[in-house]
Image (cartoon, rainbow, N blue to C red; front, side):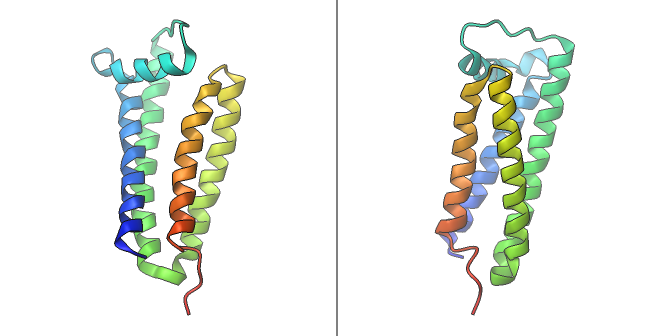
Length: 141
């Protein structure tokens, strides 16, 4: 895989990690500004009550997103290093992405945060661009 596509995936993982930090920051008031901004974009004028259950959920979701970013960083690097033999890694990552996308997007719409589907499409789309653009799924000769 070319250096361009390796960098593409590393930036992709980094962006997921930044989003995890934004979410985790909602766990406490002094660092909740970025997540307040994101939620205001997604929900419009509706007031979001930053009560303890929401803060807990944001903190846990942020931690999970950060953990996902770190895991994907190492899995993608391993898949790239394995070249044609890395396909099982790509299959696992793609299955996780599809599972996340369907569940997250469906629940975003159901809970009234339908605009969240747009960044979901962007995240999944940039992954798929990298996956197909890099030729990661091609079998080695």
